[in-house]
Amino acid sequence: MTFQTTEPPFRFRQGTRPLLISMPHVGTHVPPELAARLTDEARRVPDTDWHLERLYDFADALGASVLVATHSRFVIDLNRPPDGASLYPGQSVTGLCPVDLFDDQPLYRDPADVPGEVEIAQRRNAVWQPYHAQLAQELARIKAQHGVAALWDAHSIRSVLPRFFEGRLPDLNLGTANGASCDPELAEQLLAIGKQATGYTAVLNGRFKGGHITRQYGNPAQGIHAVQLEMTQSSYMQESWPFDYLPEVAAGVQPHVRKMLEAMLAFVESH
Image 1 (cartoon, rainbow, N blue to C red):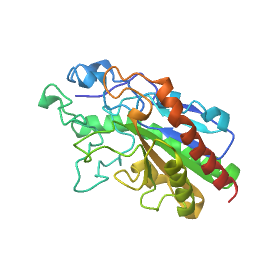
Image 2 (cartoon, helix red, strand yellow):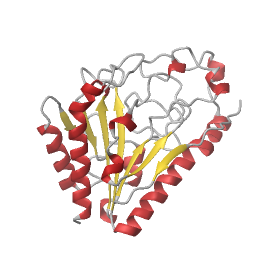
Image 3 (cartoon, one colour):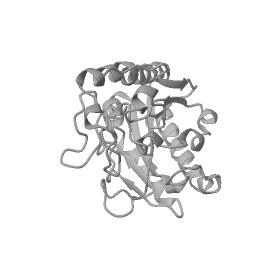
Image 4 (spheres, rainbow, N blue to C red):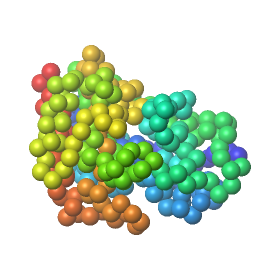
């Protein structure tokens, strides 16, 4: 089987300040030929980071650059290493080109439809490589212009997912690759904002320490600070089908997320 797509691999808006917001899992596009191979449940693309562009609608006002995926993670996961190596060895994870849903159900109707190496390479070339090329290029531009760069990798996930973690996930999961991807002082400032957010729980480098993007691009010694925020979807939306955005609920958490990004900008612009 081969892979083709007519959809551009990303949407991008360039900002004016040293901040890039990356949204690698908001894409919902699955080319029709691939969608035909998926189960009915998979075609609903349930494991999407829904509505993050709307939640982060203040990004332009902050002067941030914004990079948004168009294709579903079921096509290819932009937050996985290109060789498919596990980010959490020994723990249950989904791969570069997933074959199952978060709830452990199969993605493909027929096991024979699971992509082989040739198709995975085609997906990587068509979607993964362009997204990462744009990300790297924009970080380099920001660094050249401002002397520093901040990368915020925006994610969301269902608050209860037994496959990946026990019980209920904290609402605001900050990841800095155990301190390797951003200055510890900045990480502590962000965690403090999360902990001061009434009605929400926050943790630093808990179950989610940052995926490939955070780990690959964060380099505080070079003035590039990368942070992943994995938010519970219950903080702003309906966690089950039809996955509606809940404006009244989102209005509670949105100011805290904005405050984190403002703190990140203040930090990098003062260093």
